[in-house]
Length: 131
Image (cartoon, helix red, strand yellow):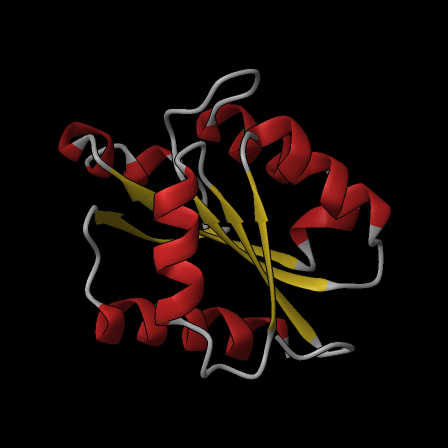
């Protein structure tokens, strides 16, 4: 994990194994990798690091605050939506079809397990939008 990187990859998934797999898959990227277990902690991270540009890998099904609530909160906060991009990674294929209503802050929706190449492409798209 690099420190002081310009970008943070925030992995929000209640399944620790999924977080570990994603961190391992993406460790070659020059970004800070941070994992949280629910939407509440994801939002806490965003507010505690107000200058960080964040690509969030977001599970929709989580306790306390789910992914859809996180997306809504990011979209409502003008300070967040300028520096956050979201990639949804979900086990629920149906939720992939709701991308239409998610907003342009959601770059992509993938079904688990996600392929490394397509995920890195989506992350690079998010980084280019945040530049």
